[in-house]
Length: 239
Image 1 (cartoon, rainbow, N blue to C red):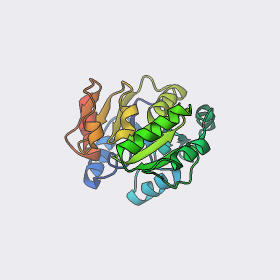
Image 2 (image 1 turned 90 degrees about the vertical axis):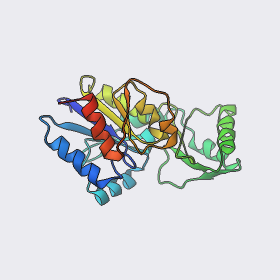
Image 3 (image 1 turned 60 degrees about the horizontal axis):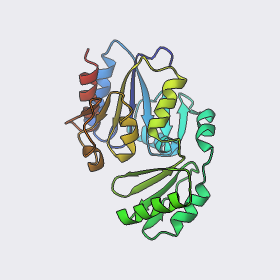
Image 4 (image 1 turned 60 degrees about the vertical axis):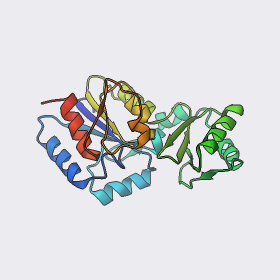
């Protein structure tokens, strides 16, 4: 990791994964470069779900795996949990109180996931979403609320999230000098796409990302999924 010169931090579903032909092209493109690319997966999936997807799609093993919308970090190849990150974000985390508040709000449905470091729900309307957010603020519950895909709601520890996880990794592994590319397609990627690092919104992105303000460090790809990643890589890091 200390010798990292180039780094791709990418969401999985709808970004790295989603177009098999474009992914093959991207991996072939990287194989022809004179440098190695450190690979970081940053996904909303929980750990076991991410492993299943990697196996199903035959994905290359990442050097670092960030799961659960940035609330868990593991280092490859053994995928050992980063306990320092877990301790850092766990302070003030109140999942039981969040679940109790959400259970009282009409139009909010709990997602059953095998994790305790995030609370995930489906919102049937924007009114229900706003109601949930207002109740959390009224009860002074420390949190970060992420809304994506027009219905998915993730409530995270206040100092977690995909962007904060990448900043933590950047410091921990001294990745400041590396040539980065951050890639995403949905609302839960917005935080990491707006860190000021070279970033790409892939061509098949969800409306909530396509509508985000223009930014000099964000490339808007025309190609979908991995094709958009390659398009942006050649823009930011031409050979």
